[in-house]
Length: 435
Image 1 (cartoon, rainbow, N blue to C red):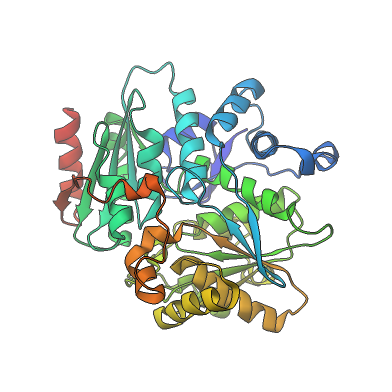
Image 2 (cartoon, rainbow, N blue to C red):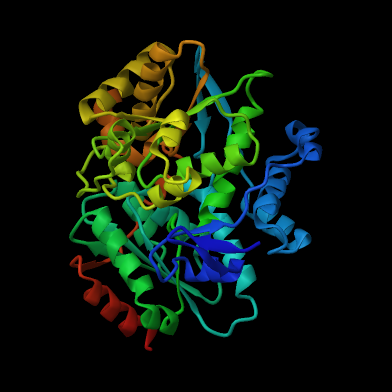
């Protein structure tokens, strides 16, 4: 399988180039040259497969012969060791729980698969790989966990000062070893722009063997398609779900579009954002207007220039009307989010995190217009990762904190404060790599 740039369909690279270099020199994003629906033999058995077995078939369909089948099976089996259950909380409203991995967030699917894929692709290389990543919350912790102590890699995580929750910050700043954290005096968009600038400086990128762990990396998206299939097969036979996706950088929604192109019957997508509503506005008006992000209590979605919009446009041939037929957008403010956290707990007994709460509001609005739909809301992170917000709404002591998160409360933060200046980031990389 070859991969092309969304800015130049004639450019073709192999999987190693697409994954390790992450970003084409023309500032596009890599996409597989073909996305072919899964064969009938898959659909005859998909509901009885394990999640990892099903994931292998999906990954193999996208990657083709880029990784030999036996090696790909090993990668998927090692990465996907946890479930993603669907919980029905109301008639026509289900929750897809994506927080059962080691860092309690959906990013574990992508980060673990990506780490193992990178290790496989570079196993014969003799140069250390520098993983550079920007995070608005959960990506940093998932990447840190996936790459911690992995031989031949070092990870540098950029995150906005004051822009992640306390426990999210602990997940990405306390591991040490080959994991470094940079606290940026700016927004997530600043962090993302600095990372992209380092990759677009081709001489610098090659010198330091840079690779990205953000959703600009195609290997992050592939395993995220797995759980759309897994969710659909947990519903009643014949139900075509409407997936409601709390969205920031739109990698999750793009993965859902890949699942649909692979043949999964999906009725519709609802892109649920907080007040950073660039995509809902695009869907309503047809004009893409990125802008500086604003801080909210659903911090992982505080993105004003979502990278994966390029892939979304590519999948629909830059056809606004076609995209609108498949995706609707809803924006939700903090007041609605807080109210929803309380109301969902009171009416259903379910504890929903701030991002899932944004999705719940969007699901209810969608059901008003399409009352026959069955909505599946992606619950992207465990509520305990947003303890201050959750306890303010539900009361102190009401949120169960899993031990693998609770143990970080008293861990020592290790992070270097920097300004949102690419030159300062490059100087840090130069200094710490010794090159």
